[in-house]
Length: 415
Image (tube, rainbow, N blue to C red; front, side, top):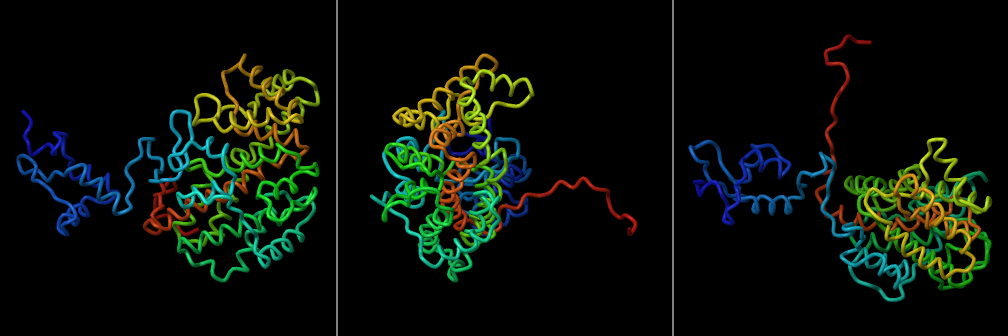
C-alpha cells in the first residue's frame, strides 16, 4: 500500500527534491531556500529520507519564476509562449487558425492581433519621414549586386540610428517602433513598378518593389495573405535568435537585426529562392518531370516539399494555392508546382510547403528569385517583435545554455 505522504492530493506521486529542482531549473539547495521563504511547501519523505513536493505547486512556482520545464525533445530549449501553436497539422495565432486570419484580414490587422490579441480594423502602417529617408540613403549606398536581405539589414540599422528612444522597452514604445519600422523596410527597397497610391496596404507597397508588373487584382491579395501567413511560425531559428537578443534587453531594432542575420541561411528564409529557380526551370522546359529527375539524379532534395512540423501539406501553402488558382497569370506556374509534387510522390511521399507556394507567386508575377525571402523577412519582422514583447516580460538573460567543453583538460603548458 502506498504511503499517503508519498502522493499529492490527486493521488499522483509527489516529487523528490531532485525532480523538483529539475522542474524549476535550479540546484537542490535552492529548492530548500524556496521552502524557507514560504514559496514552496514540503513533506518529509517516508523513513526521513529527504522531502517530497506537490507537483502542481512546483509547476506553479516554475511559471511565476520564469523557469522553463524540461523539454520532452531531448534537451532542446523550450519556452512558454502565447503567440503561435502548431498542432494536428494546423497553425494557430493566439488560438485562431492562421489560415482563417490570413483569408479574412490583411497583414497589418494580423500583426496587431499577434501583438495585442486585439484586431485593429483597417490598420495601416506608415513609415516616419526621418527614418525612411535615412534608410533609403543607406540602402542607396550599397553596391548594385547587394541582395534584398542586405538592404533590409542596412535599413534596420539606419532606422535605429534615427530613434533616440529605441531603448524604451515598454510595450507601447516597442509597438510604435514596430509600426514605423516595417513600412520603413519596405519603403527603403528599390522601386521596380508603379508606386502604390497613398494609404495603400503594406502588401501593395511591397508589390511595387518586387516586380515591375502592374498590381492587378487579385494577385496583390495573394501577397497580402502570404505576408499574414508568414508572420510567425513558433520558435523557428530566426525567432530563437530574436528572443535571445530580447533576453539581453536589446532594443526592438536590434532584435529584428538578429532575426535577419539568421533568416538569410539557405535552410531558412532563403529556401524559397531554391524553389523559385526549380519552378522557373520547370515552366521554361514545359514539364517538371526532367527537373525533378535532375534533382534526384544529383542527390539534391527537391525544394518546396516537406516540413518537419506537418505530416500533410503545409496549411499555409494550401491557402495560397487556393488564392493563386483565382489568378489567371498563375495557371502555368501552379500546374508546374502540382506536377513537381506528383512526380516526387512516385519516389517519396512529400507534400508542398509554403516555399513552393511562394515560388508560384514569384514566378507567375515576374519577381526575382529572392522575392520569397524578401516577403519572408518583411512578414516575420512582426513576429520577432511579438516574441520580443513576450521575452521582455521574462527574467533577463535567462537563455543561457551551458557549453559541453570538449577541449584539452587544464592545466596545459603556456603556448
